[in-house]
Each structure stands twice: as C-alpha cells, then as structure tokens.
Image (cartoon, rainbow, N blue to C red; front, side, top):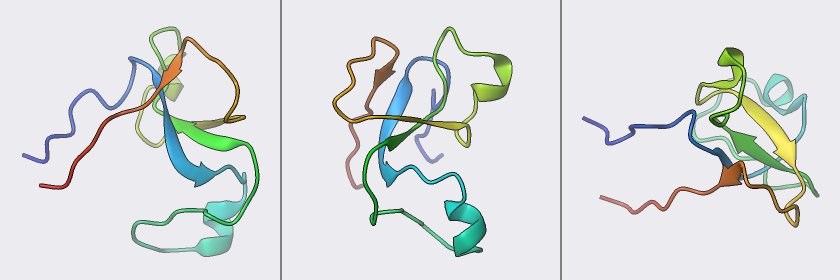
Amino acid sequence: QWGHLDLAGSLWEWTLDYYDATYYQAVGTCSNCANLAGATPRVIRGGNFTSQLAALRGTGRASKAPLTADPYAGFRCVRTP
C-alpha cells in the first residue's frame, strides 16, 4: 500500500539526519523529525546483509562519516507520488 518494501537488510541506507545518540530523547514526540543542526557523522539505517538480526529494521540506526566509502551502505532513490 505505501510502496515501502525492502527497507532493511540489503544495504545500510544514508539519511539526511546528523547522528546524535540522544536526539530523540531531547525532541520527544514529533512527526517527520530530522536532525539538521549538526556536524558529521550522518545516520545510516536498516542494516545490511551481514548485520545481526537486531539491526535489520527501519528503526535500527548507526552512524557513518559522509566521506567514508563503505560497500555495505547506499541510498534509496525516492520520489513524491
């Protein structure tokens, strides 16, 4: 229905957010939250095909410096409906 298949397990996906381990606790409840005020590293989500089971979910997140080459991280092309 929403077109959001295969969100986890192929590659970690780069996101717009800057990584801050305490960001969601500080913000509280929000809709479409994005941490745009920060510096490196950026958030990657979803795990990859070598990840442990706990990382294979859309809410699973880690961090990676933007200029880091990583064969296990990529991005998803999206468009508005």
